[in-house]
Amino acid sequence: GEEHYNCISALHKSMRGSDANASLYWLARMLEGGEDPLYVARRLVRFASEDIGLADPLALTQAVAAYQGCHFIGMPECEVILAQCVVYFARAPKSIEVYKAYGNVKECLRTHTGPLPPVPLHLRNAPTRLMKNLGYGKGYKYNPMYKEPVEQDYLPEELKGRDFFKGREM
Image (cartoon, rainbow, N blue to C red):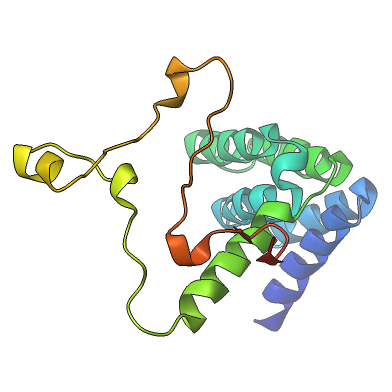
């Protein structure tokens, strides 16, 4: 019932608040109460990107490994795998930068009026002669061929200067 959602919320908020002790408590309360360990593991995968993100890019690897470990061996053996992951997450630095930036992109798409802007010609793949003749791929700079980053626009013209990480135009 409702307690299922209350406990997962408490686990998330305890990890978000960097309280490893409380995080372990809420994890154990769920697992000892019969919660499906794969449900907890799936929520940890989401937490790794939503709450830790780029502050510790290995968090997602930890979460996926925990999910796979739980899938392979099940309860009760997988409880320590989840406990390790939960403590790792509670102790990890946190960043919601990517989560917020993606939300800004979604908002941009939802509020856009009219047809979405076309992909700039230089970013389009040109597998046929016709596409090449139409200018697909023309002027594209293949970054690995340069020692320094190249100046090149990657957003459609009408979004030029838009910074989704800052949530506004530059």
